Length: 387
Image 1 (tube, helix red, strand yellow):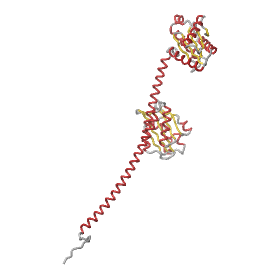
Image 2 (cartoon, helix red, strand yellow; image 1 turned 90 degrees about the horizontal axis):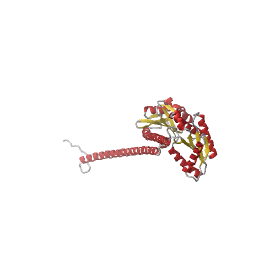
Image 3 (tube, rainbow, N blue to C red; image 1 turned 45 degrees about the horizontal axis):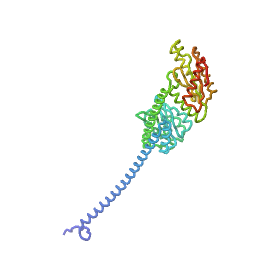
Image 4 (tube, helix red, strand yellow; image 1 turned 60 degrees about the vertical axis):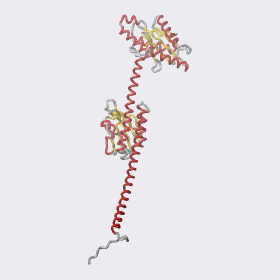
C-alpha cells in the first residue's frame, strides 16, 4: 500500500497557506530593503542637489557682487582695482592681477595687482600677446588652468622662480566678442582651481569685460565733449581762449578775489597798426602777427594760473590772479618786449593795466583796463599804461 507524503501544517492542516505566508514575508523584507535603499539614495540625491544649489547660489552671488562693483563707477582704474579685490575675496585668495590689451592687441599692460613680488610686478608691466600666462589667454581667448608651475616652465614667466606658488587660473575679460584684458589668479596650494572655479571666473570675467568697455566708451565720450568744449571756447587762429570764455573766467576770478581778498589784475593788449600792416603785406602776414601776440602772451604768463584770451579783432586780454599793479606791469612789459623780439617791423603792442577794486563791477574793471590801453595807444603805442 503506497503512503501519501506528509507536509507540515500550521495546525489547521493547510500546508499551502504556510508556504505562501513565508514567501510573502520574504518578499516583504526585500521590499523594505529596497525602500531603505531608495530612501538612502533619495537622501544622497537631495544632499547632492542642495550642494549644487548652494554652489550655484554662491556663484550667482559672486557674479552679482562683481557686477555691482563694476557698475558703481565709470573710472577704469577704480573698476579694475575694486574688481580684483572682490574676486580675491570671493575665492579666498591673496594673489592676483589684471592686464589690459593695447589698442593694437599686441601687448598686455599690467594695470592692477595684489600680493605679487615687486620684481615680478616690474617684469610683467608689459607682456607680449602669446607669451606667459596672460599673453596665452589673450591670444587664445580661452581660460587657462595651471596646476603645476614646474611643469609649465617658462610659460609662467617670472612668477615661476618663486617655489611657493603652485597653481594659477587665467581668464579673458571679454566684451562684444573682443578680449579687453586678462584676469590672473595665483595660489600657494597645488590644484587649487577646479573646473567649477573656471566656469565661475569666466562669468566674472564677462562682467569685468563689460565694465572695461563701458569705462572706455565713457572716457572717449568725455574726451570728445571736452574737446568740443575747448573748441567752443578757443579762438581758431591764435589758440587762445575766446571772448565768451574771457568773461566767464573773469567773473569767476573777481568773485574769488572778493571772497579771498587777494589781488587781481587785468591787461588789455592791442596790436598797433594792424590795418596798415595788412594793407602793406597782406592778411596772411597780419594773421602771423596776431599769432605772434598770442605766443608772446603765452610765453610771458604763468601756466595754469594766468589766462590769455583773444578779446576780439586785434585786441587781447590777460587775467592775472594774485598779481597787483607792480607785478602786472612787469608781465605786460615782458609781453611787449617778447613781441618785439619776433622782429615784425611796423607793428607793436599797446597794453593797458588795471588792478581790481573789490567794490567795482566786472564791466567797470574791464572798462578801466581798456581805457588804459587806449591811452597807451594814443600816446604813440608800443608802451604799457597803468590805470
